[in-house]
Amino acid sequence: QVLPSTLDRAVDRAYCRWSDLTADPAEAAGDLMAHGVLGVRAILCPAEASALSALVDQELATRKTQATAADGSADEPAAITAYERWFGDVRQRRHRYDLKLNVVEPTVLRAAHGLCAALCPILEQALTIDAVVVELAAMVSDPGAKQQAYHPDSLLPSWCGSPLYTVFVALQDIEPSMGPTRVLPRTHDLESHRRLRDTSARGVLDRKAADVSGLHMGCSSGDCFLMDSRLWHRGGENDSDCRRRLFYVTFGVPHCRPQGSTYSILDELVGRLRLRDYHRWARVGKEATARAERIAAEASEANRSYAAIQVPLEDICASAATYTYSRSV
Image 1 (cartoon, helix red, strand yellow):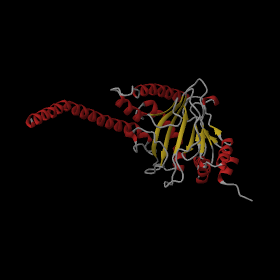
Image 2 (tube, one colour):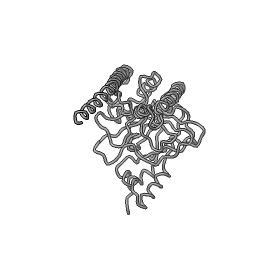
Image 3 (tube, one colour):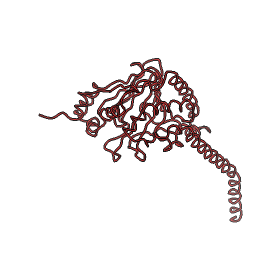
Image 4 (cartoon, one colour):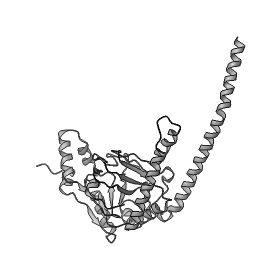
């Protein structure tokens, strides 16, 4: 008799524990590490979730405008720069956006503080109190967004022994028609990765069996779920009339960057935000933003200086060419 594999056991025992803030952190972290996913109710109050939802809408409209320009226009280089700064890569990107957020925004900072205060004991057990933020962004799915294929955010096999853990916070009630995230619990191990990537007939059967066991992460506003970055999951099709917004923060062990993640975080915040020091994020973020703005201003001035000398250089070159021609004649 063939013993059931890890993936077979995952299909048979698909489970996600939903906890509240009174749960034992060690027990909750154990469930997260065993199943790859853990739900926690009401880590943000409705007012905080609503305020952040409004900010995400405002930021998305602004950044889309900045990142849009006609091909070949004078504004195209600036639009490309804005896109690379504010948007991360996302699968099935039509009507779906991965928008980087700045922690200096008071609304973002309050939400991040609430998240860390609520989940710090769990994340400390699963990672370390010195865990570093490697992603800080919002995932937005508009009506018409298509269903993604199942995928992990970090790949196995990996030289990196520690996973990333992402906290997704619902910024509105998420109904089934809005395409909530669907997770495949207990698929964050090497065998599951190999079998779910298999292109043979056996692989097709494995993916179908795993899909049957999948769980939709429907949440009320302010609820969150923590997910191991190696867990297989997908974003669903949004066939509702409503926008779906998730605020998310990803934590990892310092200097450990598993392959596969998009690492959606503003450049100036990379490596600067630690779980231990979340109460200092406002100061750290302001210092990082000021430095980034200073560097951008210096680069802009250098570009203007370079442009200013182009005409004289062109005139000198033209004069030199004329002089050489006249001498040769």
